[in-house]
Amino acid sequence: MLGFVENICADEPYCFELRPEADYVALAGRRITVRFQQVTAIFDPENYELTLEQSNIIPGSHLRLLLTPDSDGVERNFRANYIWIGD
Image (cartoon, rainbow, N blue to C red; front, side):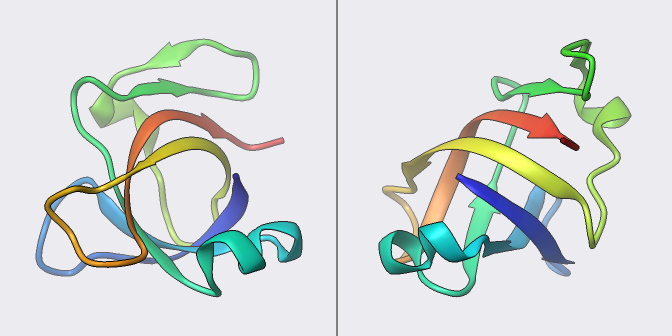
C-alpha cells in the first residue's frame, strides 16, 4: 500500500494514522491505523535498513507498506511487516 502519514498516535509509540493513496481507498478506507514494532523491517529510500529509532516517521511521510490486519485491533487497523520511507 502507498500512502501518507496523517498523524502520529498520541497514546502509543510506533503507531500512526495513514491516508492511503487513491488507488487503495476502496481496499482500506480513507484513514487506517498502522502499528509497527521491532520485527518490522524499515527501509530508507536507498533500501538501507533502519532501526526503530532511525525511522523518524512523521506526519507527511510518504510510505510504501506491506500490511497485515491487526488481529487485536478493530476494522481498519493494520500491522506493518515492511515499511519503505520515501519514494
